[in-house]
Amino acid sequence: MGVHRSKLEVAISPCPNDVFIFSGILLQKVKSSIDFEVHFYDIEELNRFAIKGSYPVIKASFAILTELSKTYQVLDTGSALGFGTGPIVVAKSLPYPQRPKVGLPGEHTTANLLFKAFFPEEYDEVFLPFYQIIPKLLEGKIDLGVLIHEGRFVYEGYGLKLVYDLGALWEKIHKLPLPLGGIFVKKDLPSEFKQEILNSIKASLRFAKENWCEVLPLLKKHAQELDEETIKKHVETFVNDYTESLGQEGVLAIKTLAQYQGLKEDELKDLFWGTDNGCP
Image (cartoon, rainbow, N blue to C red; front, side):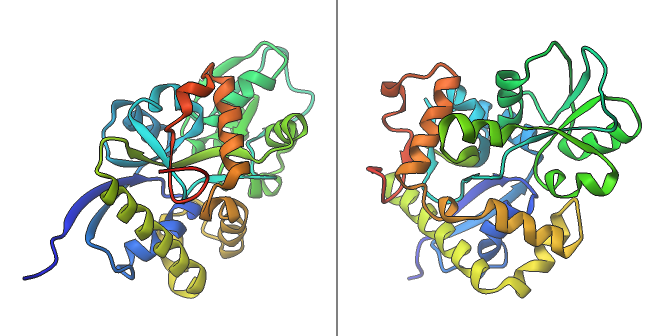
């Protein structure tokens, strides 16, 4: 008799860090009892799907913990958080006008949460897919743009000027890595199944780290910026020690961001799933 196999639908972004983490799974290099069916969406689409509970495993922003904490847990592996990784605010020209029109990469993103917390002036918000923000700035359709993903690495090449580094402001206040997004798993899945999901993602990440040349074409297939150096810089920035395991500092950072959303400590007691950090 063959080993029983379970099918699992997973939703992630096409950004290099997510694709890198899941590349071992996508390239079928991971031994697992799970058949992964991976879907790709923009981060704001992912957040909306997560709020609806559409996928058993999904990448989502840590800015929507209020909506997700009752039905999902954060997997110990796969998160994007760190130092020097935060959203940045840029302009085509300075000074920018009073009450600027600001392009934001989605209502439910960590970028939007931080911008609201740290931007001191009145502004008009325009929600856009993240990859449209630089073009809209260059066209003069918006005055300021909040950049995430590859945008923080390429904005200078478009002649754009840095106004604020929201991640640096967070780090100055909290002395913690900035939590951007993580891989969420439905709480009601069996414990053994959740552990197999986690083990598979860990193995996938391990494969990616050991096989850059094999993984690169897959990253290029999905990336918005195709330049290899930009893709490599993106992966090196957003895939780090916290991606492998949140550790106590990563857990504390996520709990700190949860406070910005009005969540209390007792509402977060079973938020994490993994083998460390006091997780199940």
